[in-house]
Structures are given as C-alpha cells and as structure tokens.
Amino acid sequence: MLYTKKADEKEFTARFAVSFVLFKSFESKVILDSASLLVKDGPLPEKPKDIISFIEFETFGERETLIEAKVTDLNRNQSMKAYINVDRTSPNCRQNFTVSKEGEKYPLFAPFISASDRFTISHKDKKVKYLIVRYYNRNYPLAAPPFSVEEPKPLNYQADSIFMIDASKVQQFGAPGFYHIQVDTFDKKGLTLYRYADNFPKLTTPKQMLEPIRFITSKQEYTKMEEAPDLKKAVDDFWINTAGSESRAKALISKFYNRVQDANQFFSSYLEGWKTDRGLIYLIYGPPNILYKSSTSETWIYGEENNLLSLSFTFYKVANPFSDEDYSLSRSPIYKSSWYRAVDSWRSGRIFTDN
Image 1: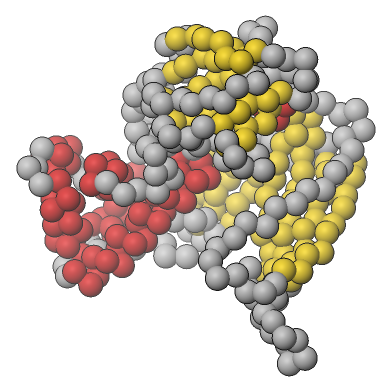
Image 2 (image 1 turned 135 degrees about the vertical axis):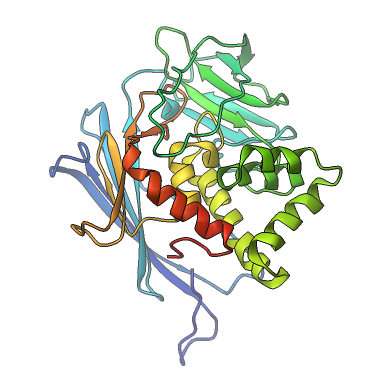
C-alpha cells in the first residue's frame, strides 16, 4: 500500500477499500451477497506489516459459491482482484480446517510449512478430536514443453503412510512432501499442507537456482552444470555467458527467478509452482496480457485480443483432492516454433515478453 500525507495531516497514511461479491459460480450473474470495507492505516510502518481483518457473508444454503474479492489502493487508484471458491460439500473440505502457528493469533493463510514450524490443526466441527493424515513423498517430473503431445501419467492417490493426530495438540511435520488431512476417508477431499524447502517460495540455494534452468538448456548442458564441483559458480557462469556481461546477467537473473518465486506463490499444488504447466508458461513467457477464468479453465493471451498473431494457452482444471490449483495445459504442435523463439530469446540474454 502507498502511504501519503496531505498538507493538513500530521502523518503518512494508507487508504484502501476491500470489497467482495458472492456469485454461484464464474458463469452465473446472480449475486448472492456483497459487502465492502474502507480502511485507513497509519503512521507509515518502519518495516513491512500485515493488515488482517474479516468480513462475514451468507451463502444462503449454497454448497459451492465463488467470491470475487477486490482490494483498491485509494492513494494509488489501483485495484487487484482475486477469486476464491467456497466449498461446503463435505466435512473433509479444506475450508473446514484452520491451521495456526504456535504462538500466533491469526490462521496460516498459505498451505506451505517448514520443518521447524509448530502448529495446530482444528476443524469447524468442535466434536472432531482426531484427524487422519495421509503422507506423500513423490518425485514428479517437470512439465513438458507446450508442443509435447505425450499424455501425463495419472496421479497416484495411494499414500506412502497414514497416521492419526490429536487435533488439540501442537504438530510438527518434518519430512518433506505433502500431508493430506481428513476427518474420515469416505471421500478424497481434505486439507493439504506442503513441506517443500524451508525457504519456500523463495530460492536461496545453488540447487534451487539450477533446477528451473532446465527449461532453457539441453540435457547435456544441464547435466554438466549439475555435476560441476562448484554448483554456484556453474550457475553464475551460465547466466554471465548467456547475458554477455555481469551487469546484464543481474537483470536477467532477477527477472527469471522472480518469475520462479511468483509461480511458487500462485501455482503450487502437489508440486512446486514453477514445475507445473502454468508455472512453465509463466516462467518462459511471463504474465499474460489478458486472462480469462471459468469454473473449469483459464485462458492466457499474449498480445491483443482477437489478433491472429497473438498467442493463446488454455489450462483445464484437474479434479484433485490435494489442491484447487492443479491445471493441465492443452498442448499442441502449433506451439513448437513459438516455444523455441522464447527459449532462444532467453539464451540470447533477452527477457521474453517483459510485461
């Protein structure tokens, strides 16, 4: 938020509006409920802060609804929208669970945990005393290029281990992988917590910096870096050689890895966001100029709408009990030339579609 001070004011303040509209679905124009909240915050904080509040709403008996949430920075006159599916179809629905870190007043808003995190998991039904945890630790392949027509392998739902926890006690999940928490096993839905690297969604180790480079390198080139005695130097040398100079490499590195972190933040499901289909396209092409969402798909357009030269990708939502963020790209051989142009751009030291 932008903090500003008017001539007659003593301190810098942020002014913003939070509003929501509740629909039956993306395709419905029927408004079930709506509300707004005006917020003024000051003085200017010395370090980043979270501003947390809530708005109650009524679903009028609907088992599934959609929230269109909007935040407007009134000082900047800029807005951001987000869409949240509200699911009350079974006791196992993830929105019936609340995760709170030990010693913190507010719930955990992201499903990512670290090995050192201590937390409690509670269910909306206070009669629930014990929860079933299905643990998974899998190595999933990277997303294939958009022109690949190879069918992905179906998701294996069989857990590596199953155990029970006491909902009244503090938990700690140290092993990497993901944890699917349920009230019972009559359906596949549940709350899923992801235990990636402790610094997730950020990247801080040479190995984490190396892995996304696989999308723009040959197998032999990547293997050579992977086996280098000094991995950090190998990654640094790759970017310097690609960019042509250290100063240009810094700009390239900043943009590339910011996209990786964005993908981790927004597209992660049972695997890190940059490894997914949406992460792949976002990493190489950048954010789309136009985005259309529906209950079952997302369409990303690079360029102008209805322009034959524009590039369009469609992702279809996959029914996945672990996440609402699992989308599969509709692949086609028509993307082959575009893909190689984008990769060649990166390999020539130029950021592709720098929106």
